[in-house]
Image (cartoon, rainbow, N blue to C red):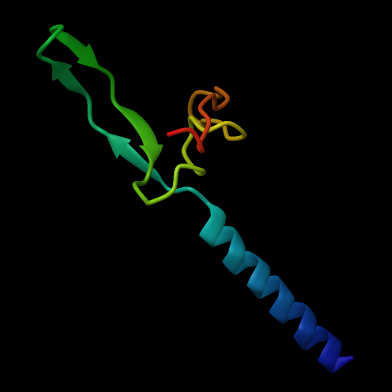
Length: 78
């Protein structure tokens, strides 16, 4: 019984660790004025920069939790 409990707890902890790796972190972007058009761009959130395109909000299969919009871009198209 004790062995089963230890194994179960180990598997749960490993699962929680994997969830943290897969989760995309959000970074806030400050608002700014666009000199070319003279318009103000509202502050927003984006995924934190990394070397993959698969976890971005705009990638197919993902969605932006702040706007509710589905991703549209193909991550494998260059």
